[in-house]
Image 1 (cartoon, protein in one colour):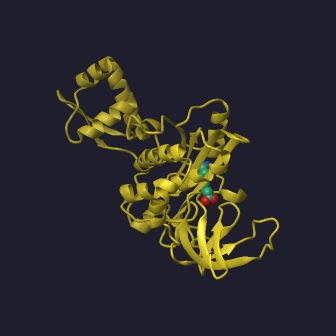
Image 2 (cartoon, rainbow, N blue to C red):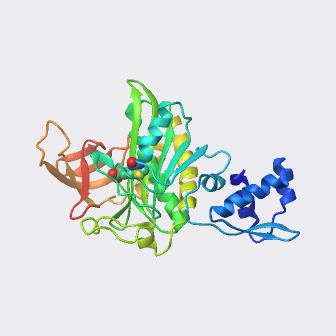
Length: 333
Ligand code: BTN
């Protein structure tokens, strides 16, 4: 009910909403409404009681609170419920546990802090409290396990669009799925899945966003940044989460139907950071190839499988994510 109350109060803006109206709408007593409002106030929501008129939402705290995030989503949003933690080891680990025990598609785990945040390739993901967004969405797509990397690419697309819409700043995708502003990374995605040969039990799309980080350690300061540092404005984290989910849901439905990235190639390539720029392919991850082998070429964009097409002097390469890395010629991007 807190979700609904927040939604009504936010939509009413300056206008007070009568307690009676809330009671009638949800078929609950005045006491129940009052109790929920009191609990919201305890959580830092400044709700004014205007005598004989009702309640007015004056301000909202910068916290990650499940009912608040849910109150910003539409009925048909892919995200069906939000589980929020002040501190957790890793939202991906929690999401996998829940998925194993049958949690439905659309369950979202959000944390204000992670004590063991995971990055790709066994790296860690710095996850301090109050400044970042750490979230993992459970999905159960009916697609082949071979197509699962597409989920990460559509997540990147949804994120870049959500950042533009909520924070008003342009970001780009560094293939396959890092979000960068300028030449600095502000967001990473780690997708994990449980599958059989031809069947996905579930996938967890884990997203880490440097939202309001003010300072980065010296060793990564030239490669990492935050949305706030780049846009000069504090990020409304709850709003960014909700809008990302709305946009992701739209892309996800189309992607699962087509089981291809074909419908998104143009949109993705438009915001591809390296498009038509020189890149270096690092082959170090491939087993049967010299670990130091690199090759340069011009990145042309992705194909319907999400592979990056690179024009080299020896011909076209279709670079597959997870097998190679791609860098800018002098920098990370
Ligand atoms: C990367 O290395 O770029 C991917 C980073 C992914 C980090 C996110 S934070 C939320 C989720 N939980 C984790 O433990 N990792 C992902």
